[in-house]
Structures are given as C-alpha cells and as structure tokens.
Length: 138
Image 1 (spheres, rainbow, N blue to C red):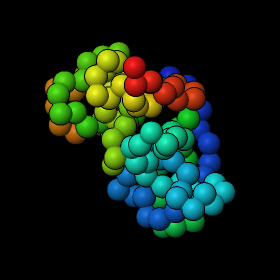
Image 2: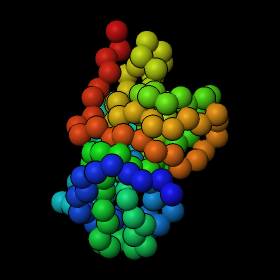
Image 3: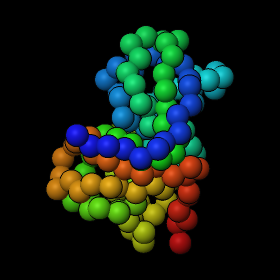
C-alpha cells in the first residue's frame, strides 16, 4: 500500500456532482460563489486551488481539496511522464507534464510528479506545491 507524506487540506463545497472527478484539479466556480469549486479548466487566467480529494455527489455538498503536499492525481500523458517532471493541468482538470521552453511554457506549474507514466491516463502520486507558479512565454 502506498503511503503519502503529510498534505494540507481545505474544505469547500462542490458546485455540481463531482463524483467522477476525484483527484482532478479544481478552481473556484465560474460565478465566484464563496467556497464553491468546479473542475479546473486550463487557461492563462485560471488559477487552480488544488486537487479534489474526495468525491461529492451533489451541488453544495462538502468536499476536501489538497492544497499542498504529497497526494494522488489523475494524470493524462500523450507522451511519457517521468519522476520529478513538472506538473500542470489540461482543460479537463487532469495533471499533465509541463516542459520549460515548449508550447506549455505559458502554464501554471502546480508541483511535480512522484511516479512515472508511459502514456494514457492513470492515478499517480504527485507533490503539490503550495501556491502555483506561472511560467512566462519567453
């Protein structure tokens, strides 16, 4: 059984049924209702809060979001993810690799992968950093 180092969790409310999005990145909901979250969508203006730790089944239901530390994440890789690779997210809220100096260089860096993934989609370990960092375009 995989053990996880300490992580920090914050309480929010789901803006909809998020039961299919456990371990996805989440952000404040589109209408900015206090303490409500939705699945994160990639974009230069989107600032994710963290990773959904549980699976709320209805709008308004309590949910927990990991904001820093070691945890699980739903990763999506068109090409290989290697241990220690920087981690961003895609338009579906799944973790994706961020490679400095490529087309993903205008991305939020959320942390790093703690497991490898050859390709495809899987739940793997990651280290989520407190406060995302924005890579520039130059």
